[in-house]
Image: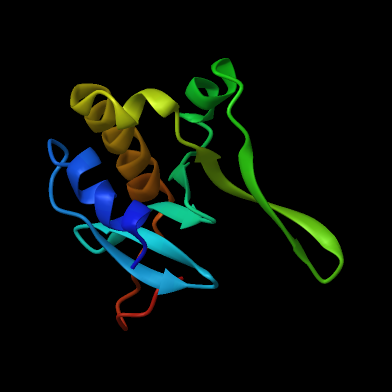
Length: 116
C-alpha cells in the first residue's frame, strides 16, 4: 500500500471505515464492501453518476480516463476536490456522495445470487 492510500483512512475517518484493494496498477477504495473511489498514480477519484456528476463538473474536476484497445475510455469516477484533504467534514460529504452513487449503480442480484 502506498503512503497516500494509507492516509485515506485519516481523510475519511468521519465517513467511516474504508479499505483498499490492489487493482489494475492502482487501488479500489471500499466502504462496507462497495467500491466508492479509486486511486491511480496517487490521485484519488470518487464515484459519480447522473445525479452527482454536476458537483464535480462545477469544480472543473476531470474524469478518470485510460486507453483500452487504442481507444480512450472514461469511467464514472472524477478527481476528488483538494479540500477533502484539509477538512474532514468536507471529506465526509464527498465520500457520502460517492458512496450513494456507488449504491445507485450497483447491479441487482438475481434469485440465483448472481448479478445481472
